[in-house]
Length: 129
Image (tube, rainbow, N blue to C red; front, side, top):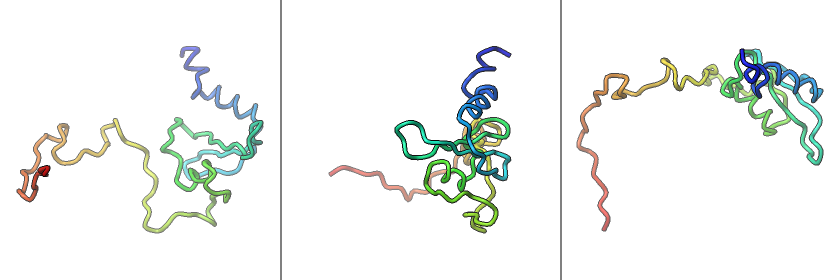
């Protein structure tokens, strides 16, 4: 492992050092195991600092919507099991699959065979007047 990878911005060593320096207070944990912290505001600012320590790889899509709202100061209510903002019709969180073999590819995509359905003829091209 290279020194840059070990001490890089997204490395566990850098993140844990940042967490120790900022002396954040643990606020909660989400269903994916991510831990959320809050700390004193930076000099000249009024809002407290909020950040997340990811359980596993640091991927922004692994932050559930209710915690995203808290992180970005949209609400001061800390999400928990009792006051969940989830609705029954919402599906569970899924990681961003772009760039993987599980990514969505519509019918006609080059990697799905590239055969699109024929146009139905209901399209009328726009002609400027």
